[in-house]
Image (cartoon, rainbow, N blue to C red; front, side, top):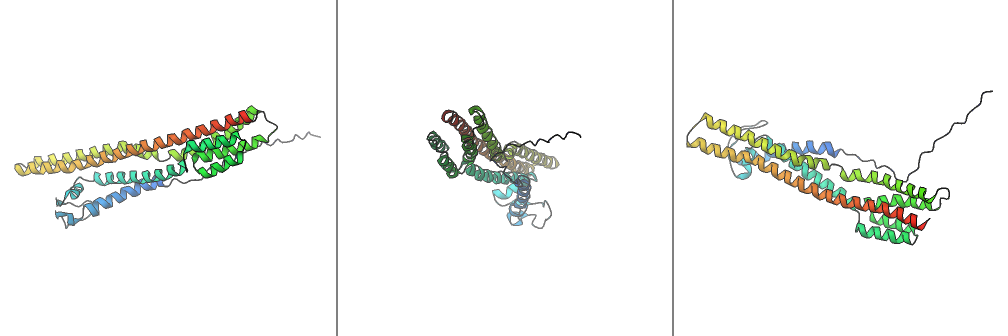
Length: 286
């Protein structure tokens, strides 16, 4: 008879950390929607016939307008780059609001340093359940990582098969897995702010250059004092592109730095949480 070899089944390591199923549809919907909204604002609000003395009968995608009434109406004459810049500004506002909500949720309730001190105190008294209760109160990224580590911490206390070093490694691995799930949520969509910070300035310069080309071209076709007046008006209108681009870029840079600072604080709290769990277990359960 042929020998029948038993098939070995490989057990997958269990983890209490479950991946979060999240959708990032805002990443591709928001920029497109904001640019469309920017065109609507430029074409139908700023470019409304009531804001101009001439060109009221013109329609279409980019109607000619003359004689702007007020400074806002002059922005329409800045050209087709203006609605794109307005769309970039609206995109920045959209992702700023989205990141504010996400970072606020990840920060949780209360001070992170105080939360870690409470967990350290409970672990020093070997009261893991109270430490878990503190994680439920914190409700942030640090609390989630700490909670995942504490569950493994509690499991390792009753484990009699592994050495202390192996138990500490298991706790550390659990913390790393929980961290790998939390950090991408914090850093998501920041790339839009950093990208717009650079692109908005370039778009503003492009709009200004196109406006200057148009103005000097008109100057070459005519002469006299009226031509000089139109040239100065054209330059003024072209500079609206530069103003919009620089303003949008400045807001993007400021908010990007604000968010990265907050994320760094949360990341530091997560790192401190992992250190707290491993050091506490190594000292209390040798």
